[in-house]
Length: 122
Image (cartoon, rainbow, N blue to C red; front, side, top):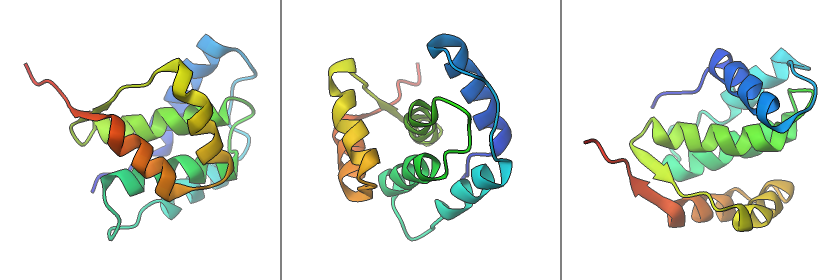
């Protein structure tokens, strides 16, 4: 399965910080690479891998700001690259934050699975 690369996440992070505010830039590139490598488990399914990507990024905190937002965006991007869209409603974000804070990959994977829809390829 395709893995996200640090360059893509650096770009995504820059876009998030421009929108949300906060200091730009990576705090620890080795932590960023390690978080992505730790999520590379071929025995996991799509949603479990997406959850591990998000939780790994939150745990590693590789950026100066917006680590949680980046974690969610990275999981959604990874699923999108695999043909799935995730409906994100602002009212549901506290539940996502709770799953991330608890490092609960199973619950986060279930949350993502419940909101996944195939991408329209029109």
